[in-house]
Length: 164
Image 1 (cartoon, rainbow, N blue to C red):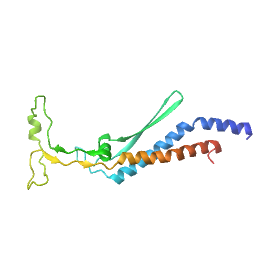
Image 2 (image 1 turned 90 degrees about the vertical axis):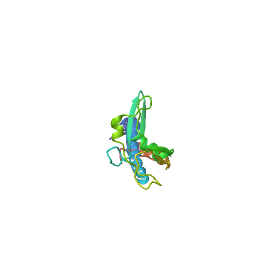
Image 3 (image 1 turned 30 degrees about the vertical axis):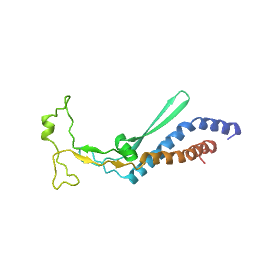
Image 4 (image 1 turned 45 degrees about the horizontal axis):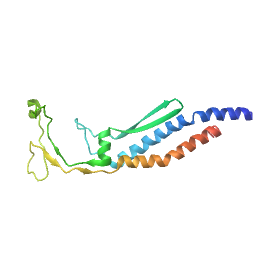
């Protein structure tokens, strides 16, 4: 291949570097998020009793000449709880209608809860002391920020050397 041909191939490959680097960075970010989620653990369960699995999704968009990558932890609520913790709150409080009335059907389905200091399950709100945050998403951000430069450098190197 001639020098002009090589230069043309490099020019074409470097044009795609932002998009390919962001795709690779998205993969790395999701892997880091899943590692941190495993480390933090998920003590939360859904309404159906299944353990909530913390994971991340990516959104890559292009506007004009700029390409953007957004990584988001899903489900959002449990990621916030794992990062920031929760305030003390009541567990077992039913939803109310306007005016403070509870639905009769919900009152019949009320769950019995066992709280600290109770000798038997009770059908009343139990005070939850709250939890401290474990900085889960903050750790994901720190680790992704540390790997970003390496991922982009690798993609530029692949574009210039032709993947060798």
